[in-house]
Length: 111
Image (cartoon, rainbow, N blue to C red; front, side, top):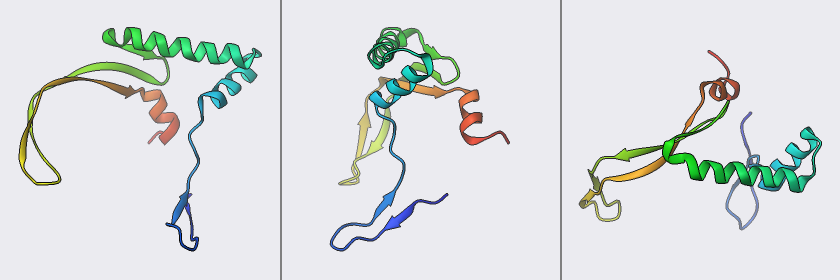
């Protein structure tokens, strides 16, 4: 389904897209499904986030969703978009999220 474009006078054109779920909305859904309070569900979400932060160095996996991994990027040449000047970009460590095959299949459908 394509997004609907809304034309409003004196405003930029807007595309109506579904908004991402907020933390409280996710906690509410978890609380309803598990039969617990919203506060307890929010605490569980916060605990999972803290656990992920603490264990991301060794790879943190959320079964069915994906995993957080640390990746070492090499130094490389880049370009300043404002001036077009070539610049050297330093090597660095970055955090990446690799989506699980099960999540890809559920979201995109199997081929």
